[in-house]
Length: 528
Ligand code: KIV
Ligand code: ZN
Image (cartoon, rainbow, N blue to C red; front, side):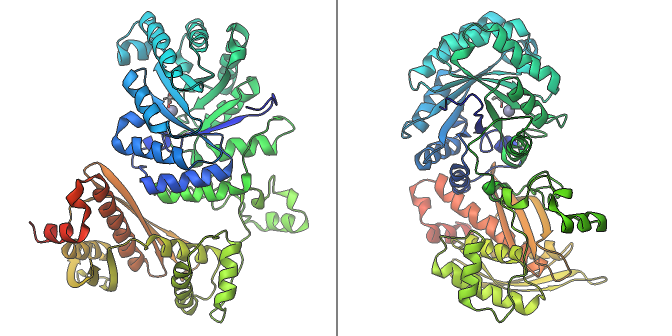
């Protein structure tokens, strides 16, 4: 821990609270990919999950804790010994780890949720914070529904948690109910009234139900909190959590008023936002502060004119400071492989295999033939597309779609399914329905389509479309993505990508004999 009194620690809960957003489930591979980016980003503490909640959560916390180089891994637990044990089991391979344990302290939660008296809660804190300290000296304690808790009672519980060994005290605004002036007062009161408060770091955890999560977090920091809990893109329960990128950039941009430091390399914020959006399938709204597509776009003539004269006229921070490169016209169909490779390095794709580069280059040539202007975003989309196809066992070979008014929409499809080439024709309620029906015919399966969305990568009618698809099977979800200038081809590939991921997910949670995909899948298709 730093001795600098203005150092604010960034505690990220994208993979725990963020994953609690309905439909935001992330696979183990996605959590590992996210964690690598977060580690580079400079996040101090990464809450990777709630280990007791499911074997998947346990595995994710455990695997993430093994790969982090700088960030401290953390797991969440209720005031139950089995939860704390699960945290310890999942985290024990890391050189340093944190156990975050919480209990509700508001009258409403104690009575209706816990069915406990305030005295019972006091006993539970004593028992469980002390127990968690047996495994690590880095214990965080949270008073759930803190902002609706009686202040004297909160002071009592905080003092006790610190006495029992908690070194971080987190004050959640669980239901996003507070406002900046009130939250500031709560933090100030704790600092002024809790006698042992100097032995712990105070933390904020604000939800966004009234759109005040970032403002409340900053008010907490101004009052003396030195840890802030937040998520990338602000994802989280209901309206989400405080957005990490907004808090960090607010402190950096208005350092004159908020002279605080974080360890965040802000140039990686844009990358972190993309990786989280891709994994969850949650698009980032265009006008989202810091990481939205339009956050640095200047549309009106007056603004553009001002920008040309002096960027400061309409820009309070530079796009480069958050890792947004000015979009550039890349190359045409005559550009060579070498220039393409240089472009990839420039775009931050550093560790690509030759195979992936070759596939992406082939796609670039096809795209350059179809599309007048190929932009950086196009290149990024087709590389991402080449990366996600690596493990696919079901591959689209060809697709023809008949759409329009009058006739029913029809799709003719050829797929390679575990090496076997198969054909189908289906009609549907629209071309996408016909495509998805073909896939179902060629690879019978029973998943629920939870989300289907299309985005244009750049502008113009010849723009590539990125399609995201989320499917669900027995409570497990996967998100697939694909890009193409043909929205229907992208739709088929996105669905297949989600399905391929689901096949991998099934194998991981199945018994030994399930691990031989060819035999098992073939039998399944024959209905054995
Ligand atoms: O919002 C909340 O109260 C939480 C706690 C578990 C910290 O997420
Ligand atoms: Zn929360």
